[in-house]
Length: 365
Image (cartoon, rainbow, N blue to C red; front, top):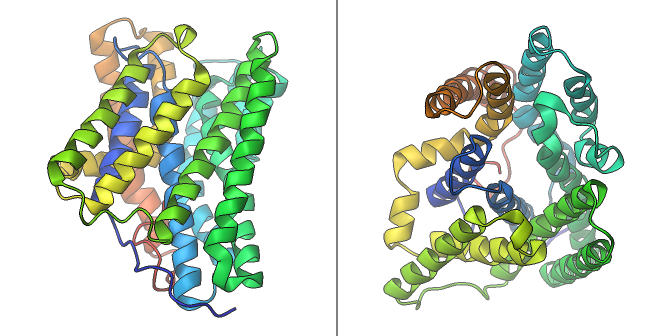
């Protein structure tokens, strides 16, 4: 499969790690029951859109520049990036069951091992998943990673010159199908099962919208060399404000689809401005502390929920000091996980995979 170069490699973008950092902090503040953070869908949605954008950019750029892409190496890299920290967190939750007995965490462990958590919540909406309830988002992401890279590779292998256009049409068709499913579900009587189904469909919609953004950018449509810098900063600030409004809104008083659309449009705008702008917002997103939070965002998301859960059971999260304690513990464990577990398995003495071909991102999404 030989193709002409599609686009220059995106390379590592610290501002996107900063955006990831904002997203995971929003989720932490929501789970800490901090005023002004009434829903965690904003942080999760930013993750979804950003993940779809990055993975599609990585795959299509590598295919375009080298004419090939190894699904096997891609999935092995995913396992090395995600599994070590997850296994450690799972072991931690298993030990914690001696202090917080219950079947919820066991159900969550079984479902998350097979990345089935989101569908477990759809099938059994009245049964919680304990300390692993939050893995529903990771399940959606991994389900997306099972079919989307294979679909892109299949399209590129058959119509190399039209791969971005055909992949874009496929993404558009999938979005329409998901929107149809969401509309059908919304027309029914509200129920926990319906809400969980909507969450899964919305997650897939955001991932595919992020992928579509990457495909449009690869065609050169979204390059911004002539955009006035003040206008780019104003647009980014409007996007951040819109996300803050959704985060602070009562979930029962806002249309779910309107919230998702706001998250998709705002995140897409922030991604493009972060890549093609050099103004105030990019400067803020590239501050070392925020970039550092973004770099440990996977571990922080994975570890914070069981830690917050345990602190809530034993101390409660109604006091500022207990929220601060849970946050400090989450950061400490996440940093240790990143340094001694995640980085070790990805780059250390456990063996190396062949490096991604030219054109891939410097950091895996």
